Image (tube, rainbow, N blue to C red; front, side, top):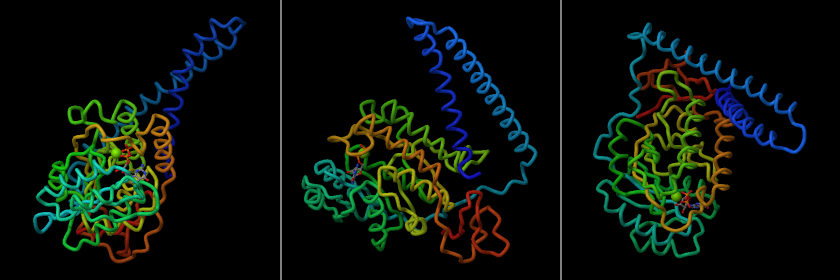
Length: 369
Ligand SMILES: Nc1nc2c(ncn2[C@@H]2O[C@H](COP(=O)(O)OP(=O)(O)O)[C@@H](O)[C@H]2O)c(=O)[nH]1
Ligand SMILES: [Mg+2]
């Protein structure tokens, strides 16, 4: 059953694409210099079967939605109260920012300066991933603590940044971001405004009006991120909110996480490649963290992309890897077995008082603070 919804969604999309392609193919065959009538008739039949299949699918979906609405109405009042995941921080949040950096000397140094000017930022770390253009030197000159991650890869840089940020003693929030000039440092305030209400706050770069038209979020990357986000929602489906977090964007590095939440998920973060961002979301959701997505601004990158936005081909490749990862993701069994704190979440605790196991086969301990 695990991942079944994601697979079903992908099959439906595939069938729809095949159905849509049959028509232009039939038109092309019609002008072919040989007899294609039989083949065209067959393709038209297949097309009508697909149209019927999709039509019935839409009707079934509507029926299921009506069922959920009725069920929701009938059970109103007996539903558990909303999961107040993260309690308010005891003081004004103090944030450590970790910037992933790979041959982005000029933009990274500027990002460091801008971030250090933000009121709640106590330290900026730059995770230099074997840059050869002086990124480490310029970042240090701008006021960052530079850490060298020798394992090449965006995910390795992110994991190292998150781990090192935990070493900064007086920070209760860790912010991850890129030093490529695409993000706005003063958006840090937006993340901190929500960090009292969620364990993980992630940026959304697909909101019209906030994203510059010449940024890398073109049609392909905007649609791609939204489509993969929908698969992620399906993976952790919840009928009422269409997924545990209203995710629209899975590839945004700019995100903030509470210290205790990060300590819980850090051992599970293992992806070193370009699909780290949805990986972290998968781990967070599987571990029962509350995730909130907030609209942020996004502008054109400074210098050439080294990641998914290098080209359409690279973007497609990273997107497919993300889809595969969402389909096959399995959290390693939690080594933790301490008693769950029942008051801190709405799910009923397991009978023995130990960690609960959710529908994804994932052990969830309820130790949010
Ligand atoms: N692609 C890539 N990015 C890395 C690597 N190491 C660190 N990074 C940083 O990770 C971020 C993402 O890369 P970027 O080129 O901006 O990819 P894009 O956002 O898809 O254009 C940037 O801040 C890079 O400097 C790496 O090995 N590969
Ligand atoms: Mg980037």
